[in-house]
Image 1: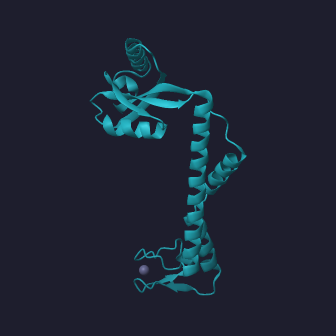
Image 2 (image 1 turned 120 degrees about the vertical axis):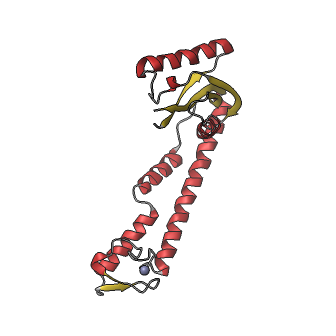
Image 3 (image 1 turned 90 degrees about the vertical axis):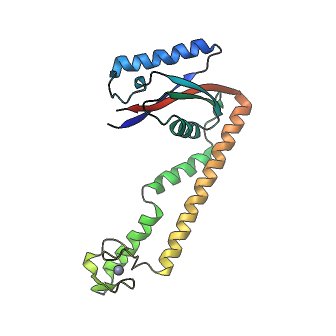
Length: 208
Ligand SMILES: [Zn+2]
C-alpha cells in the first residue's frame, strides 16, 4: 500500500465557512468519482487544516505541504498562494532561453561529452584500453561507458574532456540562473501592473 500526494487549487473566499464548505465538497466529489478505499485521491482525507502560511512560489508551497502534512492517515493541509492577477507573456529573450534549455535537456552535457569520448575511443587504433585505477585491460569493442566495467573509475576521459564538461555544465547553469531572473522579473512587473490574487493550495498524502 503506497501513498500519492494529491492536490488542487481553489479561489480564496472572504468567508471561511464558505471556503471550508468548498473544500469539503471537493473531497466529497473525489470520493464519489474515485471511491473511498485506497484511491490515492484527495477524498481519502477527511480533514484539511487551513495553514497560516502564504507563498509566492507554487513549488515551495507544494514542498511545504508535502513535508508538513506527511502522514497519510493524518489531516491534509491548505496554504495560500499569492500570484499576480495576470501575468504578461514572456519576452523574446526569455522564450529563446527556455527553448535553448529545453533543447539541451534532451542531451545533458555529461551525456554529450561521454558520447564524443566513446566515439573517439571506438574510432581509435588500439584494440584495448587500460584502466589506471584497477589495472584491467578492457577490449575497446566492450567499452560502453567512460566508467571502467571492473572498478567503475572514469578511465577514458582526458583532462580536455573534463574541462569541456565543466564548461558546458557551467554554461547550462548560467542559462538556468538567467531564466529564473527573467521569470522573477516578469512576475514582479505583472504583480505591480495587475495587482495580486490569492488562491488556496490544498493537498495531502493519500493512501493508494
Ligand atoms: Zn578499472
